Every structure is written in structure tokens, then in C-alpha cells.
Amino acid sequence: MSQTQRKEIAPATHNAPPTHLAVAGWIVVAMIPTGGKTDAVFFAVATHAPEEAEKAVHRYPGIVPSDARSALRQLSAPEISKLGLRPGGVRPFDRRAELPATIGDCRITVGATASDGFFRQET
Image (cartoon, rainbow, N blue to C red; front, side, top):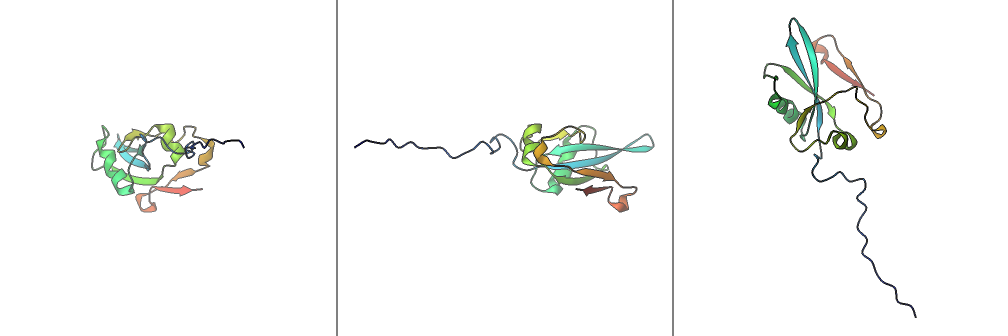
């Protein structure tokens, strides 16, 4: 009779995000007035709630409380991983940058006025 050895097999963790990265985040846009026009600056912010993300952008140099801010959408796990975003982190986000294919297509359209909500997400 042969003896079999039992091996403990660790659960699959190849899809789990590294523990040092944030588990949630948001894309936030800040509308910054510059010389008679308004520039849209995008940030990746590692917070759970969109309101927290909008407030966290104030920590970034050059953003003041009077600048309009809006959380556009949640970050996906692949985006957080590619950005290396840590909990509580705030960093500029280039929405034109190439992201992993698993994220899918997302187009953001700039509205004409604040009453239109500045931004509208289309998928």
C-alpha cells in the first residue's frame, strides 16, 4: 500500500491586490481658474467615499478650497495597481494614459456649464 503525502495548498492570490495598495479610489477633477479660463486637472485619490476624495485633493499643492471639485468615477483594481496608489494617496491622473485592457472603455465629456454638472460619464 502506498502512502500519500498531504500538502497544504495556499489559496490563489494571483488576482488579489498587493496589501500595500489602496482597496478603493476615485478619479477627481479640480477646475482651476487660470488667467481668464478654467483648466481641468484630474487626480487619482485613494479614499472609500467620493466626498472624502474631493476633500483630499486640497492636500495637493496649488489646489485651494474655492476650486470646484467633483468625483467622476471609482478607480478599478487594475488602475489602482498600475498607479501604485497607496491608502490616502493623491496623485495627478492623466486620463489619456494607456491603462490595462481589463478596465474597458470610458469616455468623459466636458459639459458647457456648471449646471450641466461639468462632467458626464459615458460608457
